[in-house]
Image 1 (tube, rainbow, N blue to C red):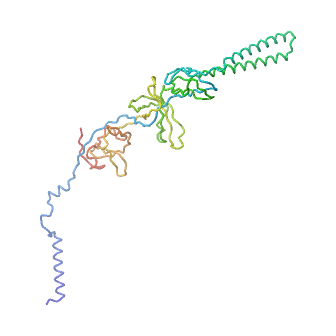
Image 2 (cartoon, helix red, strand yellow; image 1 turned 120 degrees about the horizontal axis):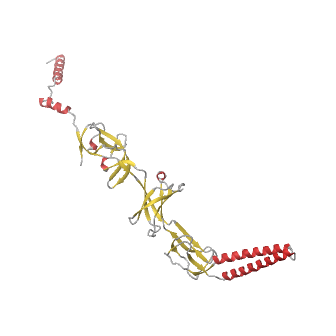
Image 3 (cartoon, rainbow, N blue to C red; image 1 turned 180 degrees about the horizontal axis):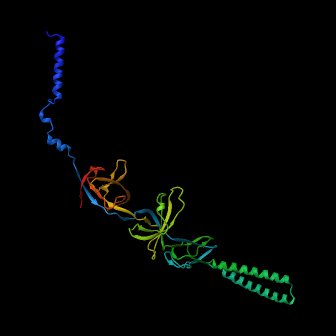
Length: 357
């Protein structure tokens, strides 16, 4: 039987031989070793191919779209200036009338008679004053009587003016040209002071009002061109006529108004409309949505190939999203933007660019 010391020496010798075998690369089959040709292939860099389009920068006006409603430029409520009975309604609802048109007349009810009485009273007081003045010049009439006669003339003149106003109150006229929209009274109806008799709308130009946010109000200015799209799909040119300088307390939005020509009054008030407000032109390019990529820092942009065939990244600003593609600002003029394979390359990488038609 072998001694423990001999067993230990034998075990150490076996371990040493195995270690030498592994160190010399003899472990495993010779087929697993890479050949010189394979090593060369592995070391050679692979150049990726991408599809590109050459872009040209052009001026583009992005539009601010605002929802709104059409309104009359002017709305006048013709009301009675005293109690009376409606005697005549010479115009019908929907009639287009010029300024000064009579829309209603009240019954006379003694107003004309009161006017004639006031005229006669004034004429009498005037004659008495003239006679008193002649007597005063001759010394036959005290000057105190002349002063009293002058006061009587003034009182009669005031009464005459009041009588004339009462007669004028019978006739109710529209102060503006427009369409008679409402006549909420009937002939023979008794009305009180301040009763609404007719509503007149001025629809030329038509006003379209909307609300813009705090961030967008700086992009709107009086006098700038605009476009109105009606609910029917029709578009009409317009001009910004008003921009509020105070925000609504609840919504923190600002009221804006644009005006459009409406010579035949075909655009009614109260229609839903869309206001398009183009901003100043900025250099931009139109590209498909698929070109957008993210940089390592999260910035949105596009990848393009420079003159050295290296991939570059250009941060962009999205100006507009149209059915034909995205309008982007920040892309260099004449850049070869990668439109195919951009997700497989990164900035600084050398690629082969092939123009996509």
